[in-house]
Image 1: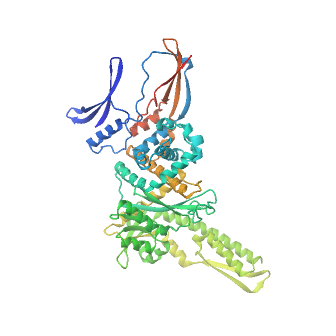
Image 2: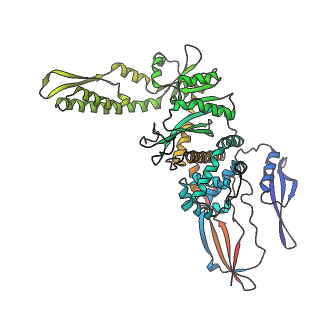
Image 3: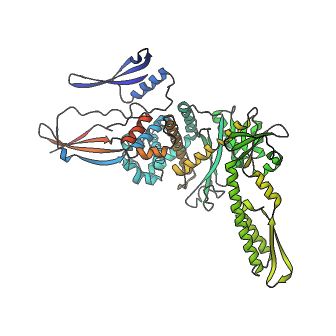
Length: 597
C-alpha cells in the first residue's frame, strides 16, 4: 500500500491531491485499487500517510529501508505567466555538492534521529534547532570527516545542506557546533537504545550474540586538562601521545549496540564488568552470548559472567595451549571450513569446553614470522659475538643488557636459541668474553607443532565445534567497526581538549558509524555489495546549482528567474539510484525571480 499523487486542472489552476492505493494480484496479473482519497496534503503530512500505508500492508516483502517518497516536498510554482527567455544568456551559478549529503540526510531521518533529538533536546531561543546542528555534525563526519572549523569554513558552504535543512551557511560556525556537541552528549544512553530499536526494525537484528572489543585513539596536544587522556598501549602505534580507550559492542553483523569511553591507560580486562552491566541494563540479561578476544580474559571476568548465568566464547593466551599438547597430535579433527580444522576438549571440571583450532593460512603466516625474527635474532647474535671477539665488549652485564634488548625486539624468536655469555679463563688477545648459542630442540619441536593453532574456551553446551568456532570468528565484525571508524570516519586524532567534548566527538562518530552500517545493509539488500564509500564517491558527483534565466514579461519588464536544480545522474549513477529505490528531486525550492528596472 502506498500514497499516489494525482493532479488535475480546474478553473485555470492546478490542484494536487493524494490517495492511498493498494496493489493486489488477480488471475490476469497485478492490479491496483484506491483504498482512500486523502485530498490535498501539506508537505509534513505526506510521509505519515505513506508510513501508514506500509503499516496497513504489513511487513514489506522488500527488506530494503526506504526514504520518504516525498523527499523533498514538490516545489511550489510561481503563478503561470508567459515570459521570453534569452537562451544565449542562460548561466549556471553556485554549483554545490548534493548527492552524498542528500543520501546522508535521508539516512539520518531513516534512523529517526531528527524526531528523537527534537524530542530529547529542549528548545529555547536558539536560531538553529539543536537537532539540525547534530545532523550537520553527523553528516559531515559521514561524508567528509574533519574538524568543526573545516565544517564551518570549507565543507558546509560547498554543500546543498542549507536547502535540505534550511540552515544558511552563515549560521554554521564553530561556536554553534561546539555547543551542539554539549547538547548532544547527555542523551547518549537514549540515543543508543533508540538506534538499537530502529536498526532492529530495519534489519531484524540478532542481539543474542554480542561481540565486544576495545581500541584506542590518540590526541594531538598534551591534554593536561583532560583526566581520561593517558598514555598506554596504543593500537595506533603512537605510544608517544595521550589516548583514550573505546569499548564497543556490536551484533554478529557489525551493527552497533553501545560503547563506553575509558582512560587511555585502562587494561582491556578491567572494562568487561562495566560494559556487561551497561548492556544488561539497556537490553536485558537473558540470552546473551559474549564473544571476546584473549585480551579481555581473566578468571575474575569469567567468574563474573558465570555468576550472572552468562554465556561466553573467549580466546585464551598462547601459553595455555601447552596444556593441550597431547590433543594437537591426535587425528580426530573436524573441518569447520576450507583450511580450518577444529576439535572439542572437555575441561577436567566439566564446567567449560575448550575448542582447539588450527588454520593452514595462519600456520603459513606464523611460520614466515618465526623465520623472519629468527634470522634477525641470529644476525644480532653474530654482531654480539663479533664485538666480544674484537674486544669491544668486555663487561658481561653490558652484554646481558644488549642480549635482552635484542630478544625484546625479536620476541617471537626469543626462545629459539639458548645463549651463553661467559668470561674466558684465559683471554684470547683482546677477547675476554665468549658468546655462544645453539638451537633449542624442544622449542623447535613445539613451534612446529603449534604453528597456526589457537585455543578457545566457552561455557556453552550442546554446540558443535564448527558452530562454536564460527561464532567466535564473528569477532572480526568488531575489528571492522574500529577500522571503519578510524579509516573511513577518521575518529583519530582527537583535537578537543575538554573531556565532555572528547566524549561528544566519539558519540558523533558512533552516530556516523550507525549511518554507515545502515547504508551498508541497504546496499546488501539491493545487491550492491557492502562498500558505502564507493557509493558516496559516485553520488557526490551529483551537484545542485542555480540556473539563471534572463527573461522578459509581456508587459516589458525584465527579470532573472533563478531555478535551483539538481544535475541529471549519469548512467552508472542512475543504476545505483534505481537499485536503491531512490529518485532524485529535480528542483530544491520554488523559483525566485527579481524584477530588473
